[in-house]
Length: 256
Image (cartoon, rainbow, N blue to C red; front, side, top):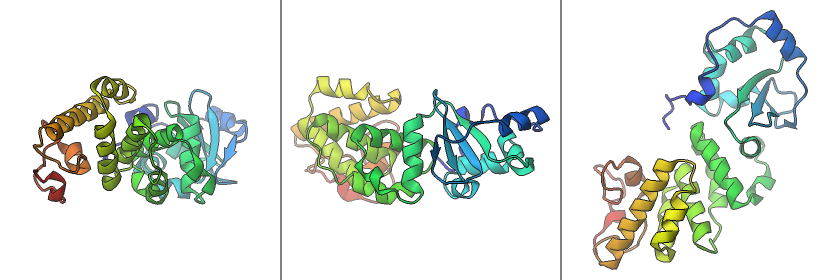
């Protein structure tokens, strides 16, 4: 996701409008936060179907993904309410985001909560999806490096770590984990794993790339190290294994 793209699911309900007195009254009567990532913060993120209320600050949000900066500074209802209301905190609704991973992502970033390094793989994967959606991946570099230091114990773990490295844009980890998947995979397992990803297109592309790479290795044709090049995989339109023009790491594509 590029920094100029804003997720439609976040902004579709945020149209240009004045904040009505009724809305101000409702906001003033809103319950307190379920989780205070930034105690006393002026923003409440209402996440997920359970509407978990996570308290943060506008300063913290605007230093991170451009989506929240746009919501708070452009003429969306939340931004108008934030700048014109005397009743804080202001709510921003994130109905399509998982409430647990939203909280964990924010706790990881704010104060570098050490307990977040103990998340399990499913939790890490959901945090990575959240970070990618909101163009926050670079902010997670330190935490993601710690998460990716884990040694996968089976194919499913290697697959999950590979997808985590994809969403966090960790090239070395993506290459290492994709190599691990290729070594341990069979066709039926790849089909199953590819369909577990929320992004069906990405799952199919990953599955196809790994099958092509597996075939190439079996024929001693290419990729003696066995892993995928993340940069080339992301921009490939036809062959997800081939080196793309301008690849900064051609050694990833050495022929055998």
